[in-house]
Length: 276
Image (tube, rainbow, N blue to C red; front, top):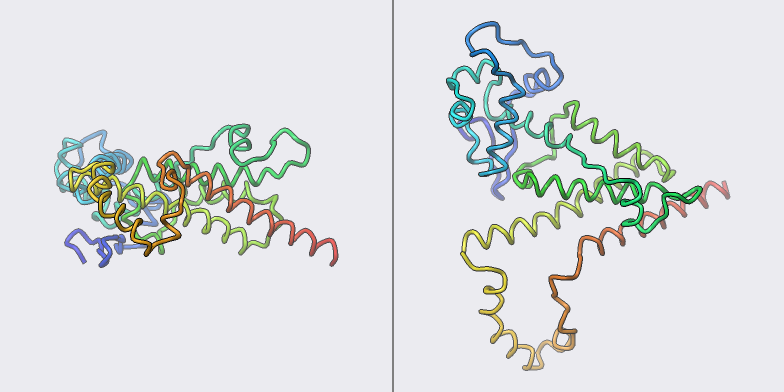
């Protein structure tokens, strides 16, 4: 465990591992408000907002109580009157950003999902899945530090629950059992996180090496060309020149395949209901 109360795993992810009871009090409004000490205007909301801004700009490692006191123009000890430490602050930051859905207009989401929102009886859940996936991807791009947090045991606050409520409400028309609806959300989020992590890792590689993607692959080109001509990799050698083109939208491709798979399950459940 780090001095700030957070716990780092071997893969670089962190988890709050602070005082869960205190985090819940702060998230749900049950915590005590400081009656003296901090300068007027300092609030828990301002502290969390500043922490998220620092993490967005410089990563989680830059977030510390000392750094936040500088950003907010107050003494470090004043912050501790509002939040016990970084571990609990991390719980508050998570709830803040997980409650930031950016729903696309219904028509736009329906078009992207391949359905007609205006048609009577249209499967609106498809547009909801599309919106959920795109909103989460936007969220991860705005807050890449989310990918560094172990969210297996997130302390749930009102914002996180509101986001889950919105997601479930959009999926009600699927006619699936409740555990299956949760499975849909987990499947979509896992797909989005995987893609976002790949993109974040690529951007980090550029920062660390100073080489652009184009420069990186250009260095390998002579070796790869000889390998393809060797006959040892016939399947890859026969692939089209645009196979690895950056123009191919892997996100849209994967999301459409997920929706198609969910459609098959929805039809299966509907048929079971008809024959029951």
